[in-house]
Image 1 (tube, rainbow, N blue to C red):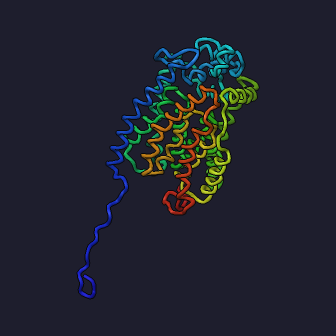
Image 2: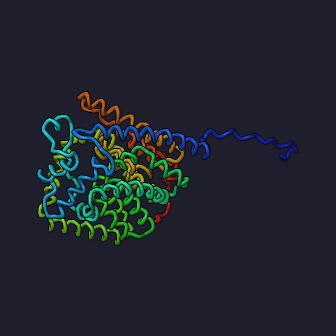
Image 3: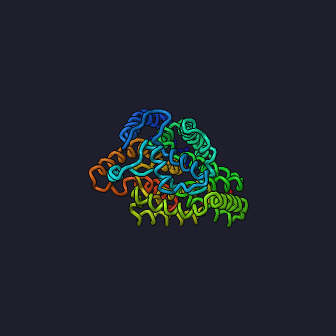
Length: 407
């Protein structure tokens, strides 16, 4: 009742247009169930038409783990895995035959060992196994570790979502399914990055630094994260992280040079040839650099670890050369996607449908010798990075509020 004696009237608040959690869960389940058979059929078709041979069945042979297995075995026998002889041996294991000039002209890529020399040391356990066992183990590890990484990302970003549902969404996404089918090393490295970030947030700096040093077998996935965490450790005097990174990298580098002298020089040459063969490029370089500059400004302003790590990893994908066959690296975008909160559904749709559709368009376009659709796989990472940056630049999101450093 108001002071003048009139009765107060209660006005009902307008109904919220936001999707309710139950509706979001139902929508995600429906999309995942529809997207899974579509992605599975597309993956099967793509691997069956790979020239000059086709897949026969388990254990898979046309997988990205094959060059790692063969190259590591060659390296551990103190021979150069980047030589033309090693490449021919990998081609025979992968394709079942050596490639002819006609195959190369038709777009078949020689399967080079283009990993850093320390890869053979880190993967010595893998190279010691027979291929039948190694392939099945790799296939299992890719799926299991990708699933295990999801709770780590949820903990790092402090996002409250249904864990089982989120794991299912990530595993049924196109990047995860494609990477698991390829037995791609990235699906081992990305969970290691998640574990390293989880340890760092819990002040286990030496373990974090050790794991991130191992992740340098895929330098394109951690070339921003390691410098950012190193700078963060210097300003906060986290000497354990810096010592662990430097000591581990030094030991791996010295051991590699002792096993195969001149291996790093050979690796740089192999990268040069590999980039020419697969035609890697960075679409929209000005836009990508602008996103990176805005991210650096946002990281300078904020102190919260989880959102900072997600932003660094998103920018890492933005600055990586785009290629339709390397979408498995987009699993580094998972923490950024989680922080977008209600827009998670929209990004899931992109993971399930947009990426396979773009891949088909790109393949058809390249098949007609038009040189591909430039930048088709850079749109999603830039959009996710921009969605994560927007609250910081507008100063209206809790994700980017200044708070005392927690680590």
